[in-house]
Length: 155
Image 1: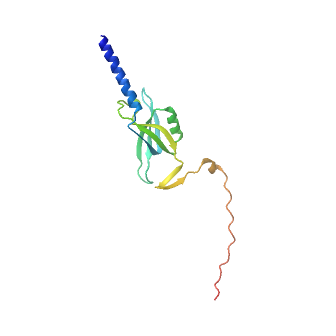
Image 2: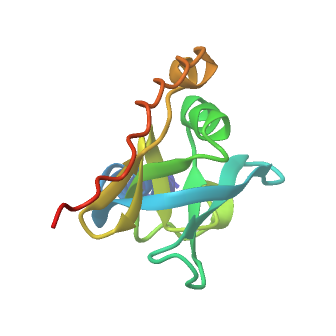
Image 3: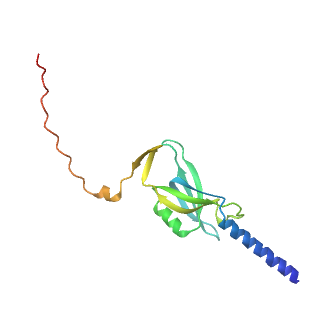
């Protein structure tokens, strides 16, 4: 009886060690930039934030979707505040988690940064207007110099 109980405790400890290792170790890390178009809290028991990032490489191209999971409520709040703006999401890819209780995707977002520039083409960026600059009154345009009559050529 003692051997059976010891084996059961050892099995539970091994399973817990496996889950801890799978959550701590990342297969890959990276960043994806685009526009968050969906973020919702899902799950019957284990609640996670599930989202969708629209990746657009060139204007007019069909957007690719990047599905991601957020486990941290603070990160989810920052992503929610950045919706509608171009963002860069830092993520870690976790492999080996057997259930959807940890999230519906393999990509776990750990950070977000709002992009301050809009890329038009490789190497060409347009700065986005800051909120303070758009609310400041603009100066009136400078007056144009008086027009000169065209000069007539002398023979």
